[in-house]
Image (cartoon, rainbow, N blue to C red):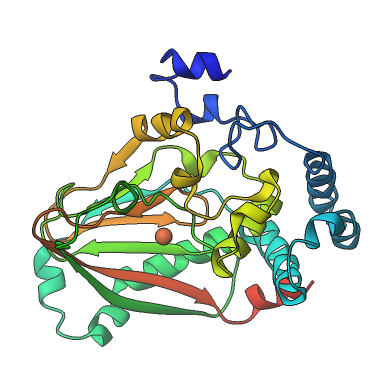
Length: 289
Ligand SMILES: [Fe+2]
């Protein structure tokens, strides 16, 4: 497929048609095009056990890969595998426009917490992840033009989030591609990801693992765009959707399945409210089962 990727055949295709198998290096969004070694079959078998909820067998078979990690990292990998198995859910991102007056009349976070909007979003969160007693958190993020030269990496930070979650971003300033608008890869939430590969990538990211010492099957981190080969990057670029708009523009998405990112402003500045939600009881219990 590499040759086909090169001759632009895939330019007009959606990413679901191209990235169809997480374990086939030519069609995986979680592996590069390089040939695979002895660990690929182990991962495929482990994923099959995971899908049957046979966690101990899954972990047993992954032992040869655990030797590349310290003891506490292995414990964390096991936790993440269970977590991702439970909480990787598909949700098509949705965009709305909130009346600016509605936002500007709120003079404190408390006003926003009590608003119908947050209640509605919490209901949405529960409809995706199941019932729980929930807590919402809000914070404002601002970014301005960076004086140092902006690298390709700054502009293409297309990643998956580690934890489950429905995130809502509401712009407080006019935001466009120049000042680092939110962008995502269309339909990436519908891709079949390997929960095992994603769990290794999370640990590589969290513990800043030296990728040179890791087998090629698992040496990504969560910044998938930067880890992928040029041919595959082009496909992601061709399927980018930008959220540009005035204050009050809102986008809601599940960041652990949607490839997304925000850029470093090349000009001007931007700020936005970020809203997320947490399950306080049942979601935690699910991870222990
Ligand atoms: Fe993110």
